[in-house]
Structure formats: structure tokens, C-alpha cells
Image (cartoon, rainbow, N blue to C red; front, top):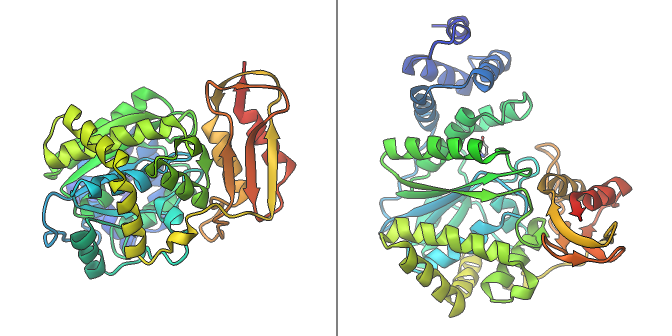
Amino acid sequence: MNMAQLFEKKKQGKALSQAEIQYFVEGYTTGSIPDYQASSLLMAIRLLGMTDDEIFYLTKAMIESGDVIDLTSIEGFKIDKHSTGGVGDKVTLIVTPIIAALDIPVAKFSGKGLGITGGTIDKLESIRGFKTELSSQEFIDNVNKHKIAVAGQTGNLVPADKKLYALRDVTGTVDSIPLIAASIMSKKIASGADGIVLDVKCGSGAFMKTEEEAQVLADTMTAIGEKLGRKVVAHISDMDNPLGKMIGNKLEVVEAYALLSGRMDETHVDLLEECIIISSLMYQVAAGVNEAEATAAVKRVLEDGSAAAKFDEFIVAQGGDLADLVQKDTANKVAVKASSEGTVETINALLIGEASVSLGAGRLTKESELDYDAGIHLIAKKGDRVRADEPIAYLHSNRQIDEETIEKVQQAFTII
Ligand code: URA
């Protein structure tokens, strides 16, 4: 078998066989297939798509490229969640302690930010002392003891995705439903949880721009998970507007903590609603209860303080300093003012995401250093009335804040 034969088949619109897909994934992971041949096949997949069988074979081959985590020594139904990536998406920080407070084991492996979308691991690493690298034993012990552990993906978990994702990032092949589905599901399956709730983001700040595309991605991922014996539920959520009020690593931790502690004036109801939906789905999948029971249970642990207490326990268990869960002053802070009087119709999540990367909250290259305290605090949200020249957002950074970034944030607001 060789790559030329695979190209020929794809060009003729024929589906690749399981053996051919395995050959490609193995060859690229081990280095016998070069980047230029892999990128050619990825672009063919991006343009022509894949059949359901091809997507399944790709996911399986990717899982088999590395280690599969064995969580059988953790008692109970292990639940995980995954977001396809958004701006201001700190849902994981909030729903994981909620579920753990309900006595369901949360064993979660998370990633770093990708492009304009933030990553849970970067957010957690903004907390002084917090350890995201846990040995398998530490991870399992923490879930058994505290019902919660969130760690970075171990070195050899789906190495095929590490290489393929890096190549896709620079060859215009990220936004492909088959490739996203296989990338996400291979990591989720290899991470060992019994059930997975998928939060599929849709809108300007997401990879999927329309609801139709998001639905196809959701259905594709659910089908893969079920074929591999996992309970999977998908929820489609809006990513036209950033989620909550804070965008940036430490700022998002601070907002998540405020929400869990019931300080709703420091956050926004869109975030609370989204967290209730996702945690309710996680509880339904894990505990087999209906929606009304799950939602009531979630609200109970939010209101009685046990979710907030679980968050503290989780942060301390992974070495984090609770005294550091506060917003830090940055060297530079700029107010962005409303361009006119009116009602905020929308806040473009893509522009806000790009601006937050320029401030230092995200990476421009894999090697970029993050400014953990950098980011954007939205003062006005969709639906709010604003007066001309009143502050609608604050930008925080330890770097120089340029005019272009300020203008971008101002342009992100459509005021009518
Ligand atoms: N997140 C992933 O893990 N992979 C993708 O391809 C896109 C989003």
C-alpha cells in the first residue's frame, strides 16, 4: 500500500478502507508518511468529506495510535464533558465541581487553548501552584478521594491527534466535520470515561458557524461514541456572543468562582443557564435520572454551597492556592467606550477572541508565552442599554495595548 493509491481512490470519490486509514494514521504518527502527503489527504478530506464508516475507522486508528487510560479502578459511572471550543467558555470549571458535589466521579482530561478558543488547562494553570500534570495513580486517587480530577492529556494519549492537529492548524484543514469528530472522539474514548456530554458550539466564535453544521458534528460524534460503547449526549449552544463577562485565563477562573459562590453580580445569567444545562445533562447520563430531577439536584448544590466547597477541595487537592483566586491588576488597563447610545444587539465572539489573543490571553504560535492575567471584562452584554462614551469593556494586559485591539473590541459591539 502507498499514499498514491489512497490519493487516487479519494480523487475518484471512493471511500477508503479500514486498512488504508490505519496505514495512513500509523504511517503519519510514526513518521514514515511525510507532512506534504498527509496534508494533501487532509485537504481532500476537508473538501470531499468522509463516509460514516471512514470517520469511524479514522477515530479507531487514532485511538490505537497511543495509550488508552484505564479508569476501572475508579468506582461508579465516570462522566466527562467536552466543548468544541468557544470564547469565554469556562463551563468546565463550573460544571465539574457541581457534578462531583453530586457524588458522581468526574475524570477529565483537558487541553490547552486552540486559536481564539480558550483551554481549561491554561485557565487552571493561571492559579498559583495548581498542578495539571498528574501521574495516572495521582489522577485515579484524586477522583476516588475527591470525586474530581482535571489534568492535561498525558504524553502518549492519541499521539496521532497531536501530529495531525498541528498539521491541520497550518494547512487550512481544521474546520472539517470528519476531522474534528475523529479528533475529539478519539481523545474522549482514549480518556476512559463511561459517559460523555458534548457541548457543540455554534456561531461566529466557534468552528461551526451554522446550527445545521453543528447538528451534523453533534450527530457524527454521538454515533462514534455509541458504536464504541459509550453513553454520549450532545447539546448545541450559541457562540455568536462570548459566554459570561470575562475572557482570559485568570479572569475566567475568577468569574467561575464567583458563579459557584452565588455572586451573580460578577457574572452573567447566560453562563449560569449554560452551566445548568450541561451539568444537568451530565447528571442525567451518569445517574439515569430525568431532566427535572437532574436540574433540581444541580440547583440544590449550587444554592447550598456544596459545589463551591467542592471547587475549593479540587483546587487544593491539585496544589492550587485558594488565596490566588482573585483578579490581579495588570500593568495596563484600558476602557473601551460605546460608540453610540442604544441597545447592544450582539457582541461578535470572533473579534473578542482575536482581541483577547492580542492581549496575551491566547497563543499566536505553539511557543507563545501566555499572560495569565490578560483578557477582557465585558461590562455591557447583549440586550443592555448603553450611553455613548460609557465604558462597555475593560482590557487588561501586562503588554502594551495597541489601538487596533481597542478598535476591534469596540467594533465587536453592534449597538442599535
Ligand atoms: N477540538 C479538538 O480537540 N479537535 C478539533 O479538531 C477541533 C476542536
